[in-house]
Image (cartoon, rainbow, N blue to C red; front, side, top):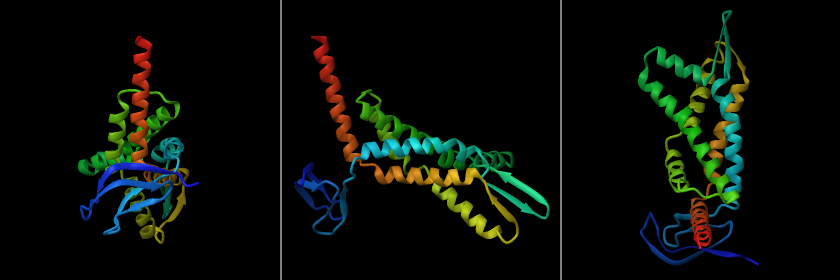
Length: 218
C-alpha cells in the first residue's frame, strides 16, 4: 500500500510562480513543478534519525580534524607539519587578519555550531523533549549551512598537495582523514535534512508540550 502525506494546501513554484493546490507526495519521492520541472520538494526518509546519527559522527571527528596534524612535508631534509588550528594561528601571527577571520568562522566555528545544533534538535525530537529555543536553533542551523565551508578548505588542501607533491614527500596524518570525514558528515547532514519534516515534528512537539502543561495545571 502506498502511503501519501500532504505537504501543504498551497505551494508556489519558485521558478515560474505556478500556484499549486492540494499538493500530495508519495513517501520517498520528489515533487516537481508540472510546468517547468523545478524541484519543489524532496522527501527524505527517516530524516530525524539520519541527521542525529550523522551529526553525532561529525562531532566525534571534529576535534581530531581541527587540532591534529593534517600533513607532514619533507623537503631537502626539512620537515614541516601542521593542523587547521595551526594554520589559523599562522595567519594571525603574520597579521593576515581578514584571512584569519574567514578561516576561523567558515572552517572552524560555523561547522561546529551547526553540527551541535542539529544534534541537539534531532536528539530532543527523538526523545520528545521540548524547549522554547528549538525553533530558533533550527532556524540558525539552516542559515549556517550557507556559511560553513570546510569543503572549500579541503579543496584548497588538495590543490596544494597537487602543486607540491613533486617538490616534497608528503605524509598523510590522521587529522587529514578525520577532516575528510568531517567534511563528508557536514555535507551528509545537508543531504539527509528534511526541513519540512523537522518543522512538522517541532510543531507537534510544541502542541504536545502545551497539552501536557494544560492538563497538569488542572
